[in-house]
Image (cartoon, rainbow, N blue to C red; front, side, top):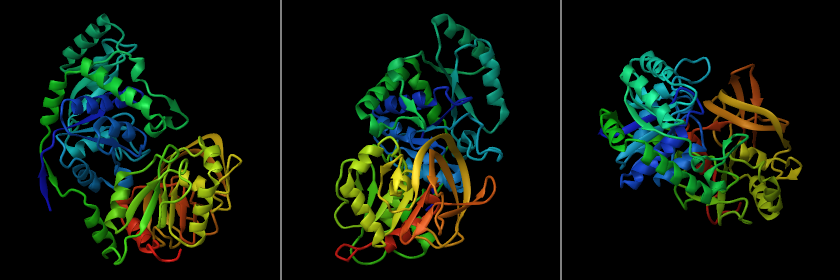
Length: 465
């Protein structure tokens, strides 16, 4: 049903990565939540880590909006679905404002997202090492695309009162509102490692303190009233919010199977932190009971597990601990050997391998994984090589790779995907029995049939595995 969505909203963007988008966006979410508003947190692009901090700040799931993975037509519906019942939506952008998928114009850029959502942009500018030049920088970003509305600037990493005065004078000449000024605050810093920020699940007490520091920094340095007024200036959006049941009906054309609801166990905990909220919603709408478990702590799969989803994360950091949990590894291997559906992405792929950096894993796949210095990163276009638990042969998907590991061999006799772009065509991953394991992260909102197929094949409670 088409609706008119009247929700105040802001897109937090920057001229480049490293300017402070995450600090500002997370701080705004927490500061407005502390004011009593219900804040809907969103993140542009495929990033899994920032939404964890957003969720901690807002008390609602952090949701991704990615035009490459889901298609531009789903940006508005997914935003409306996530923002339902909220007083304010804050969207953190990706990279620089106009940066998107390589060689494909504005696709998957923050600018494209801001235009799709008709949202004003707050530009976070690193003010260090410049004064009057900031006006030229901001003018360039504000004038590059007249459809992108930059509503004001938050200056970050400002060194002194005099430095702030110079920056404000320059931006006043350019006619741009300064909505906040932030100084360096070490307490708000969040540690990073080989794939970016350390996820919330790995450092929750420290993450809570970091989010509180971000909130205080933003509250003290930003004009929250002016930002609230800017957010309320966003025009209404019209359209139908995304709905998992409707997406399944449109994609699969069949209702959930009758009979007892199967249990789909979803890996979580510190080693497996990468997931999209819509995946669990689709599995539930497809007729499953979604039950989380932690491979670092739980020695048994959830009772009556009939299917398994193991997403991304950092198993390389926890390889000894994962390996030490031999009882759970044996259960995972037995479930896969019995033909139950197992969907694994990236970290899940490594967990199903024979070994990771010499530590025994589940042994479902006859492959060995190791850490490398080489970062594999980027969007991928792929096609299902053969029928699998997630997709029939010929299904085309858009995905994303992000890892520093190498798997030998990289593909099984029956690969999961044929990657067609970028670079020369290649096969990747494993599709054997009920197992679908791959480096490729895919957003199921663009492939709802994946959830339907997995649930349809899941073992029902009381049936033999």
